[in-house]
Length: 498
Image (cartoon, rainbow, N blue to C red):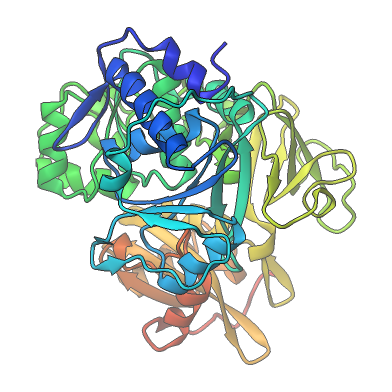
């Protein structure tokens, strides 16, 4: 059984293919198993035992993988921390997760990681100090139910929360989506998503381990370095960011990367391998579900009736849709809040009781809106806590964002409310080539009048979009940008459609 990190690493001990590659180093499965066993023993001798909570803050690299897997295979609890954290944010997360040992690079991209007082914190280590540890202490047995990781996440606003997963639920959740993600032992998967997000740790590191694939990553992507890495390592799956793929395609100037296969972001695929718009499913997941919990095979078109959906819930997950106000289940095709239950989801949240997290019958309210069609396909319709009223009618930012992204010339769109006295305006930050007038005219063809943004913020690239420490759009900061005069105001039509 490979339902713990230790068991999974042992199962790959005779595999000499590369497991993870960064621009400067690579490590095979066999090397990873032996080196993490030695390091785990050294951690035990250094007083880091089973159940100890260990923070890790460093850039994507092979050493991140080595340290994280050594920590978890001997039963300590990994707490991946964002390299975007400020000192107060870092202090707050260390306190929330009761971290006892912090492993931190001294500096990355101009940020230094020096927390304030944390009662539980016993020592701060550098990665080099940790990697030098060796010992002969035997590792304690680790069970599938033992805690594996605390990952921080947040909504569009509010304090980040520490989500707890155990070995068994995290590996089962990752395994349930392998087929939909199209990752096999022959895959060479490029993934620059930070390892401190579930998209990096779960759908990157653990996905590669379970599939026996090779993971290729880099700490600071740039068009030149990324293209050189993709070519050198003959990457077959590109799982970066959509705007990154679009920028690389522009940089290629019509050339192709011949090793890329279907399942990669389509901006980098040759025309004959691209699917028609809307025919492939977008995976749906969250930190609390340890990555995607609904999807469809990446190399297959959805049935026509299911176009625009997130596929079907994976085995091991129950999904129900409930009325936002009453909590009662709704009929197929009716939009409500998505709730999930099953052996793959979170075990808890730091400093919250089970009663605060789950419904009495064990469902986790995701805060996402959507519906299930009669065939069981799941359609996502935004966040319940993002909804706001305009002229008495509800506006869901996710719906407006999806509509704007269908407009030619729009690469990305981010929508929120902009308060104007006691009322709301619809604000949109858009990455693309159109003017505000052109955007408004085009938006009227895909949105009801009351949903058409009346404040526009035109951006050159997605790097200008404000992000919180967990990598999600900081809606408060975006709202301030749109309302500060940087947004381009557009007069609303005299008639609206409530």
